[in-house]
Length: 168
Image (cartoon, rainbow, N blue to C red):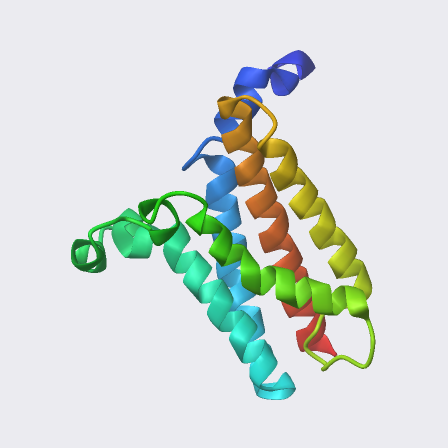
């Protein structure tokens, strides 16, 4: 495969497609981030516990509450595979609220609890938001690809925050 094939929009769109390679990697990163924040909560307190819980809820949503793994009982009860798509409209933005609060606290950078990431993580979160914002301005195929990319960026950021803080 030549370099031009790696840069071809079709290849990139395939990798970033819903349920594609990027999403699979993102889900693994989110699982590790969840575990790192959960481990850290013993040292850093309730704030880290809430971040771990937020990561776990997002992971459950990503896995369609187990349906992607073959467990459909909860989906049968809820009636939808995932709430962020099933509720319609911009309801998926509700899942962004905890991360906006967390990284706005990081941007403040003043005498915050030990579990709040550093200011630079808040700046990185702004790049995630920018990528998500750009996705709204492009064609539907690229919108989905950029959405998956912005999710991956957020999960990497959560993983970095969880592992960095766990070491402190």
